[in-house]
Structures are given as structure tokens and as C-alpha cells.
Amino acid sequence: MPPDTPLPRADAELPALARGDALRRGAPARGVEAEAVAAETPVAFVYNGVSHAVMMATPRDLTDFAYGFSVAEGVVAHAGEVLAVSACARPPGISLAIAIPPARAAALASRTRSIAGRAGCGLCGIAEIEQALRPLPRLPAGPRIAADAIDRAVAALPAEQALNRATGAVHAAAFAAPDGRLLLVREDVGRHNALDKLIGASSRAGHDPAAGFLVLTSRCSMELVQKAASFGCPVLATMSAPTALALDLAQGCGMTLAAFARGTGFDLYTCPERIA
Image (cartoon, rainbow, N blue to C red; front, side, top):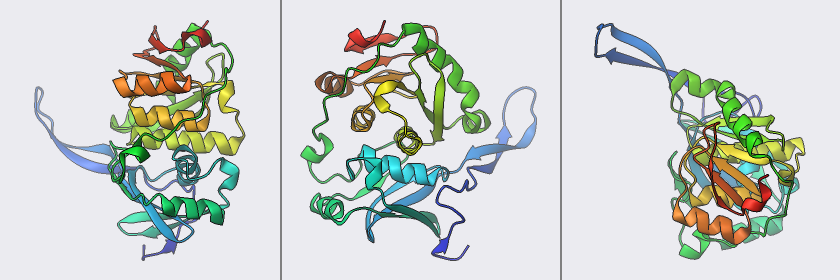
């Protein structure tokens, strides 16, 4: 595909899987076998013509990615301030042209932030410590969530992870109703990218973030708490461990944080009053 070729849609499902030839060792020896491997592509975020960030991501759900990243990183105050999104192939990656109000673009330029993010990192390239630890909104009370609703949501998530079943290399983020029904799921090679895509999809669908909870198939690091708080969701459950800074941030913004959620229970760390 030639440079700057418009993609069919910004949310077009580009190839998320590639082929890898593996020489299997062990008994019985089976020789070389073809395997599905996860695609990982540079995705550039360009706001009003100015490049802001490049993230290594699964090249799928790109419109959701544009909306969610913009909201979760505080580029815009809400999804309604994302005025337009278009995608162009710029080998070896993809460029997302995102239109936002001029005042937001000016504020973004004043932050002097440039990110070159690997799939495992959501904060690479931040110039100042203060930008990494930006103030978070105080979260609303939200509904009380039954503990077994979190278990149901976690247990249901693997069935929705088609890319991870194929590759074993992809994270998922889900938004669940208070009863544990999964309303939306997004996957990506980066845990923070999966959450960005989920936030974008939920915002575009008109879901109230305070009327449900988030489930992530990863450890809970501080940038995931930041993104969830910027989205406005008061309850976050992750399948693996939290970091100390994630706990501090969750307590500070009034977020209920559950970790080691495996479908049969979880450890509750902050703001337990929301869990029945």
C-alpha cells in the first residue's frame, strides 16, 4: 500500500494476525509448524496536523483507539470534543488524523509531550515528572457491585478474547454492567492500548462509565488507574497484581480497585464500600 493511502474506514479491521514458523522442540518432535502471531504496528496520533504520540498497537479498532486515547490522556475533556478521525497507511505504520477544538490543540502543544510508546509502556517520552502524575478527578459513588458480579465478568472474558486465543499474546479490557454482563470488549498487544480502545468504544456507544465497572487481563499499573479515572469509572478489577503507586492513585481519586481477580474471588484494596 503506498504512503498516505486512506484506509477504508478509520475503524477498519486491518490484519491483526500474522504467521510465524516455529520449530517445535519436545516429544513428539513435529518439526516446523505455522503459528498465528499477533500483529504489532506503529500507530501515530496526529492532532490538528501535529504529531503527538506513536504507540505500538494491534491495528484494529482504530477509531475507538483515537477516541479512547484522547479521553484517557486528557487531550480532550470528553469524547464529544473529538471532531473527526481518519486513518492513513504510512508504511510501516498507520497515522490517525484527529481533529479537536483549537483550544484543546493549543493546550496540548503547551504540554510539550512527545510519546514513543512500546506495547508494554504507556508513559514513554514524558518530559516532566508532573505530567506523568497528573491530577485525577474525584470519582462518583456509582452503583454498589455484588462481588459475584465481578467474578462472573472475569469468568466470561476469555470467551470474548478471539485474538488472544489465536496467539496467547494479547490483553483485553472489558466494560461490564453492575450485574457482571460484559457490554464491550477490546483487545490489543498493549494493556493500556486495550483500555484506550475500550474507553473509546464505550464513549462512542454512550455508556455511562459510572454505571458499571472495568475488567483488565493484566497487572494494575498506575497509568491504567489514570486512564480509568479520566474515563470516570469508579470500579476497576484486574487479573494480576497492583503496584504501590496504582493503589495510592486509586485511593486518592476514590476508585475501588480489585486485583488477582480470576473468576473465583479477588483481593479488594481500596474503597471497598462499593462492593456488596
